[in-house]
Picture 1 (tube, one colour):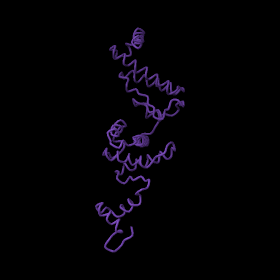
Picture 2 (tube, helix red, strand yellow; picture 1 turned 30 degrees about the vertical axis):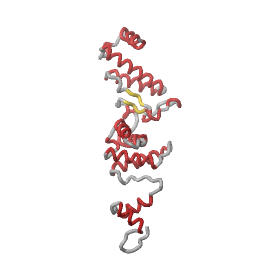
Picture 3 (cartoon, helix red, strand yellow; picture 1 turned 120 degrees about the vertical axis):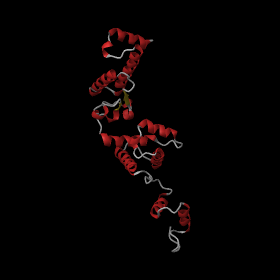
Picture 4 (cartoon, rainbow, N blue to C red; picture 1 turned 90 degrees about the vertical axis):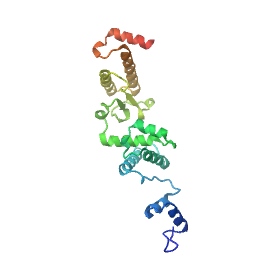
Length: 229
């Protein structure tokens, strides 16, 4: 990149490349030339808030030492974020990010985006029962004191109470499930319990029952027959 004469900014080849690129900022062009052909992560094209969130997500991954973060994967995530035209990872919910990734041509690694988003959300809201309990979908990796079995694979497990349509049954189910988890119940058993409540919720909707006072032994027997049919 040595200057050949005083009329040019760079050497002949880089001068031509610089002019072809539209004469960008000289310092930026020099950095671009230095990283060509190298494994690098370039966050300069992101909005300020989004850039900080990506940096925080990268730091959290490095601290966790759970998996590698190839630069090409991060750059695909950067392109996804730019295509989504957001100022923050929190501007879209997880399902919306997954939908955006599915629609993209390059099929970027959505896992990094989701992990970075959750890290930022945890930084903003905190973690623990106070945060998760009001939610209708519990993210188990954010809950302390849960007995984890190797077969459970709980790194991204959810307990979905949003499929229970009756508010009173959903609230009772949450209280019951929290008590079971707090006493050492496995995640698999807790999920089975929530699935059973979801099935019961579907039966109640089918039977036209919308109050706890209407639940009695004959109704439960009807439910057992409905499940077996």
